[in-house]
Every structure is written in structure tokens, then in C-alpha cells.
Length: 171
Image 1 (cartoon, rainbow, N blue to C red):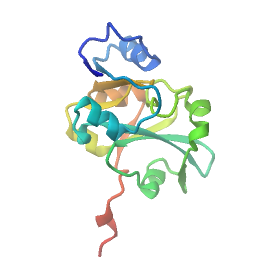
Image 2 (cartoon, rainbow, N blue to C red; image 1 turned 90 degrees about the vertical axis):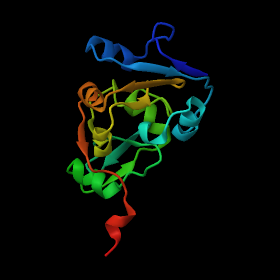
Image 3 (cartoon, rainbow, N blue to C red; image 1 turned 30 degrees about the horizontal axis):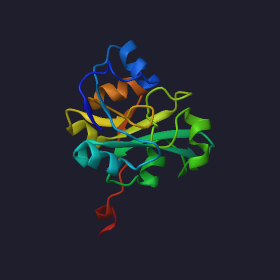
């Protein structure tokens, strides 16, 4: 359990192979993990600041198309803003049982890089203020640190305002 500054000792995930093929630099963090743990627990295990660690959420729109959203781990996805960002009437979270069939990844190892298909992906605009962010590496026990811009390149994502903000509803 701890940081790996070299990716030589870790079996490459599909996401890592894609980053390598695009010559995108990244740092690998690995930790012991037998089953799903949420991203906040992972950040705590690795001693990482919450605002730097992002989670990947998969939704389905009213059109039945799938969409991927990458947001800070301690934040909530605003479903209305998310839907608007992908030009849908509404989006709903994909049931956990469907994650593998849709993405090729398992819960807790899901990353926007290298899913079975290229889905429309949005990264919360807050990421643009950071030099690096940390996302799942494509399997349990692996996290990847890279620039938000490189994550966008590797996943075909755009940045958007997609976080729930209670102050949006104040007069």
C-alpha cells in the first residue's frame, strides 16, 4: 500500500497502455485492494488530498445513450447540469450491475480512459485549476496521476460545470 513512482512494477492496465501509446506522462499509485472501496477511502489510504482525486461516474441519458462524468471525490454530480452538458433531457446513474457490461471496467476500477466504447465524457471544470489530478487506473488497486488536459485528450473529454452546488438554489 503506497505510492509507486515507477510504473515498471505494475501490470499495465488498458488505460496505462493507451496513455503510453499517446506518450502521455502519468504517475501510478498502487494499493492493496481485494474488493470495492470508495474513492475517499482510497485517498485516505494513499494520503492524497480529496480535491486532487476524481471519481468516474457513468450515466444513461433519456435517449438510452451512455455518458461519463469525472468529478472530485467529495462532490456530487448535478444531474441537471450533467444532462445539459451532453444535450440530454435527463441522465440517471448506471446501475452497478451494468458497469462492467457497458464500460469493460468494474466498480472502483472504472476510468474514462479506454472504455469498451468511446462515450461522451465531461470532466468537471474545477479540474482545470489543478496541475495534476488522480483518477482510477482501470482496475482495483491502481490510481493514475496526470494533468487534467491530458486526461481530456486520452478520454476525448470536454470540461463542463457539472457539480451540484447548493448555492445555485438560493435566491
